[in-house]
Image: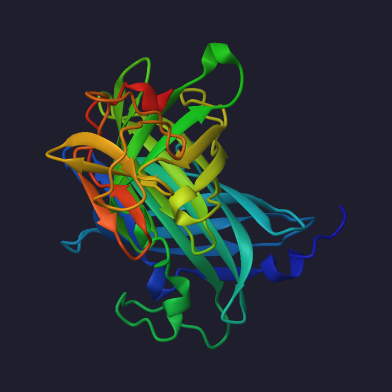
Amino acid sequence: MASNRWDQLLSDSTWYVPAANRLAYQLDSTTADPTPVSDQTIWSIGQAEGGRFTGQSHATIANPDGVTNSSVTTMDGVVTESGQVRITFTNPVGSTVTAIGQVRSVNGVEAIEMQMIASNNGSYTTHWAYMLPVSGSTTPSASVTDLGDQTSYLSPKYRWLQDTSWKFNSLGPRTNRTRGFFTISGYRKGYFWGEGLERGSNETFEVLGSITPEGNFFLNAIDKDDFELRFSEGGLLRGPRRQAKAKLRPYTNNQDQFDLPLRLRRIDAIQGKDLITEGGELLAIASRPGAANSAIEAVAGLEWAGAGGLVPSDLEWNGEDGILVAMGVFSDPGASWLN
């Protein structure tokens, strides 16, 4: 088998989660929002050849009360010449979890940036981290407060995701398409959560995901009725924040999940001619608050039905960015803005 540029980096190596990336989030069916937990994972990798490698993973998750849950899984991974990584973790009973990522240079060290979601005893845990190699002088920190020079391992630039709304539709055969929307209600250190609605079936779902400092957007939708993973997809978030969009690909090949690529775009930031409201009613399109115009037309890709039509529950003028931002839930999730 031909050698791979990463074989030497991976062979006979040990990897750990730095203190700055120990944060993970766990969601169960009894809570409205996910719970922050601590996840320290140690990889022990054997010989790597041609970009393929195997090993063992030891993960310890601690909840806010200090209760820990440890697991040991086998690893079967591959890394491409461009540094893309996919690892399958298999537990002793044969259940698998897949993690996706990329080799990146951070603080002068080659790190393996990973994102994943796993189910366990009625809950879902999602974690993203830069896995770092253990060297002779490295001792993995037991404290999540001892960050040192690890601020570059955090993901603060996407804090604007909080209180944003998104439209998605699938790409592929018309007979198996889906579309809908979701709102991100919370964000912290690269993690986001919220809820959404799938059109047609009108099924509601919880959102739990992560985004890396480089913009890798990892979206998971968990059905509210049976608490099963409806879809799990990842891709690069592109464009300025007011026009952000992405094309997402399925994260796993689970037959129970929706498996077509998704097109995603932000829908709650309106630029150019902005909308103004008074008392919750759509009055006009205007270039700034206080202006008046009787015309009502499509703005930034949103189709507004005119007087008495679809309106956000609340709008807020952002003078710094010169836009009007829809802050609340739209009055009719099935109206023409989702077409």
